[in-house]
Image 1: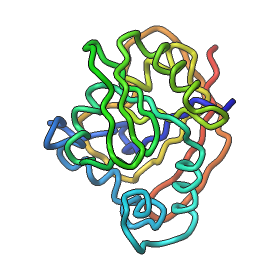
Image 2: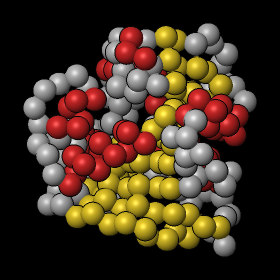
Image 3: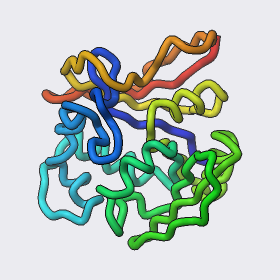
Length: 206
């Protein structure tokens, strides 16, 4: 069985999106800056049906992450913000389980992506994704509320942060001060490049 993993870019001051995020502005003001490191990579471009791109450690990491994923879980806000820009052929090419309060029939897209809408909470979504993923990983596709919920439920095996050297000064934080659990992380891998530092962490409750 694979792991439940979260993979997300974050600013030095802890934001995963800028202010005023929402449909039409999914990453918020200046939030695109958090993802500029990934757009030129050959592995990312291949995911999106594009040719060319750069190779190296960053591209290898993205390729590894994509190949490990057998199914995805995402929050409803993430789905609402991404549905239009993803278009008719989203890059997931697997089953995606969307955590929501609204019942809805599955949405089948071109290229192998099917969005299933789960009303039973993060636990049910992760369990269904585990069954769909088989021996591969369940990848959390965002956003921050979903990652925090899976972490709080004790279901997160691995957190991979792409630390971008920028201060956004506001927006959507990955972690908040809500809740009373203390979580410590063990660093299991660090990969440096000029534009981003990749941290692989394993959570442990104390």
